[in-house]
Image 1 (cartoon, rainbow, N blue to C red):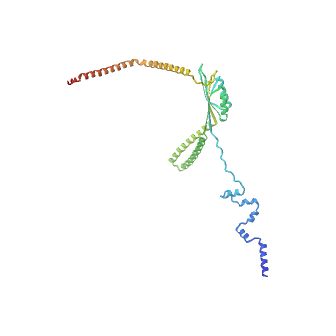
Image 2 (cartoon, rainbow, N blue to C red):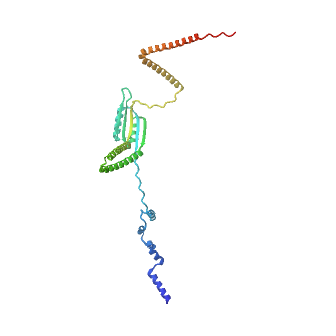
Length: 324
């Protein structure tokens, strides 16, 4: 009878609880893995730590979520100064000058400097300093070279990006420093401390001057980087022929050239001697008496020395005769 009662009690416990002692212990401790496994997939991330926590990154990666990439810094705008120098030989200087002005207007630039030189019967020249946008630099320079025959074509670039960035940082720091000085000045005015106010005013003025100078350098670099500079020289030669490459001189040419150089040197020496004589001519009335006086003094000194030598020889006692 007792065995039957015990068996019924065990069946009752199994039907009512439906869980083992181990599962009851896990429920009491809050680790119900069976419920987590049965939970829908969209509720699983709620059990993960937030992304901002130390373990958030690993948990998000484990859950299949991709973390947002770090922000990418904006690319630095390059500041490059372009400059060029061009010399072109043209047949008609007036027409070439007019074409230069039309090219400048077409490429939305301006003439910074212009100068014309020439005398009747000589080669006429015209020089310009032109400023055009950087985007039109190459096309504009090629158009200038197309006006005639280029004798010179040089280009130079100067990358001032680092200097520009440093100057920007300097302006930013100076402005922040100026702002702090102004805040301190307002506080000192409330306290009515005149000596400290005067010192602060001097520091603010000095800082403002530095800011203005740095901003001026920034504007200059930005202007030079935005507009390229081209120096152009036009030479008017109607029947211009490019010089042919010179051949190696022969021995006869070298002899002839050496003789011509020697004759030229002799002629130059004669001319210099003649110029020296012409330059000394006005001084002759003064130089001749001085020269005569110098010669007289030299002769007198020579005679005096000769007389002293004769007197010494006369005053010397006669030598004794040899013993015989």
